[in-house]
Image (cartoon, rainbow, N blue to C red; front, side, top):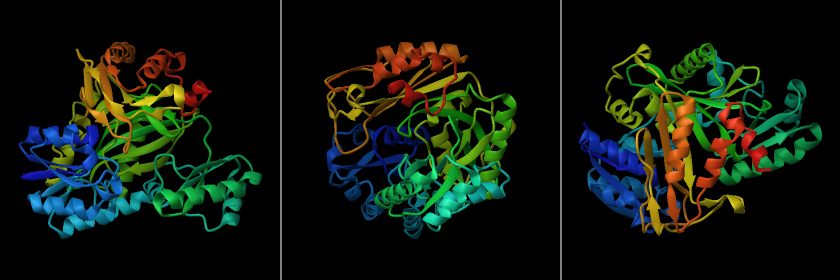
Length: 446
């Protein structure tokens, strides 16, 4: 068993990991920036240490300071959460060099899957369906035009090292390729330090569906079912649910099996997510793999009864999963809404400030993963997530009704939130019918 785990993150995911450590009897060590000295994670952890100024690059993204905090505090493991250093292969290597266990995949896993083009090749080797495209990085503008001409417009240019919707451009015709090529590469270079791009056929009005993977160090790989993540704004997920109202039981089984095959082909270890695009014709295609815990992991936990963060720690300790695919049973329906400090009336502009009063919903089937409290001042330096509100019920209509009740109880004074936006979304016919896709939110807001 680990004696002490450093949580290299902040906000709700840091709180979530601290709770898992406490459940397992492991000492938790929080790191925080000067702007987060009053943050919840820095107060509820067994130990905490300041690692630098507010700017993430000088604190949460500063590899040397995080490693130094672990060494000076006697931590024998680091959990990265999501974002920040969770997909930094060099950070993982440095952990190993200093005798610290990284709770996550290997550096090789991260490098392979972090390169989107190589990840597609891995999926193809595993026999999973992939979107027609360049099958690797594009060599030049001319190469991009040649591939697009063969598979037919519209196409998507995507940053190979991308994420969060950055470095992506839709190209509707050959006349748009030059501009899209220049803009996608420039944005990719600015955001990720890598201007490599690849090309894929554009799938009109798809569904975004992801499969949760768990793989131990002994060759055991299983999936925990799917999450429907199609309700997005500017490529950022807003609401997730499990199971997907779109998939048939047959398609669900095939997609899960393909996800497991991809993870095995990659030699993956840890918790990860295989993401697919599914067309209206029910055909689906591998999109990418995220080698970390996902923001939306709680919906899977609620429908399967499996603690994914605990499983991450157990896998890092070298333990066997202890159960097979046939032991994983999905029960009921779960929905997660991301409650953010932002103003929908002002293009969802972030709204940092003091939370003057706060009422958090509760009752049967309601879970709130949060890091805020009354009197807390939301800093302007990080993301605007206040909480993840998750509900579970015996079926989808029941879960929707329960989410409406819970969201109406989520009262925040002092900063603007998107709670009313969520309430309207929950009543929208496209959502209640389950007949929505990646384009739905953008169309509703225009």
